[in-house]
Length: 111
Image 1 (cartoon, one colour):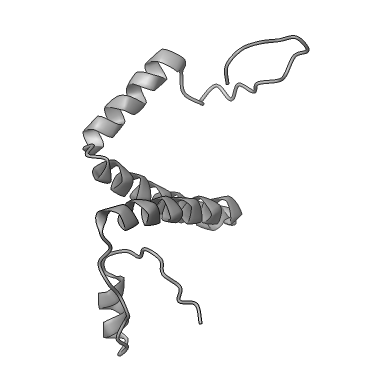
Image 2 (cartoon, rainbow, N blue to C red):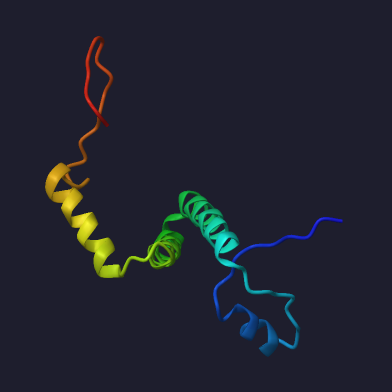
């Protein structure tokens, strides 16, 4: 028999207990936590991509929560993360211009 293991938000065990159940949980070590965070990011991005319009903001907030956890795990503050984002935006731009890349025969360039 296979056991499902996935990273959940910190208050989920408390919420389950309030509903009269006892959750089966453990605290992951650092290497497993890093892997599970990446798995969770993939899960949350998938949920965002599949979400109906009315749920997309909630799902995007979940993605951001995982990104924040990943940044902390990498030793970054949220200010560090925002600074890096802003530096890249200043150097290469953001996505507000809605510019689309098309392959041009014999063309070159970076995406």
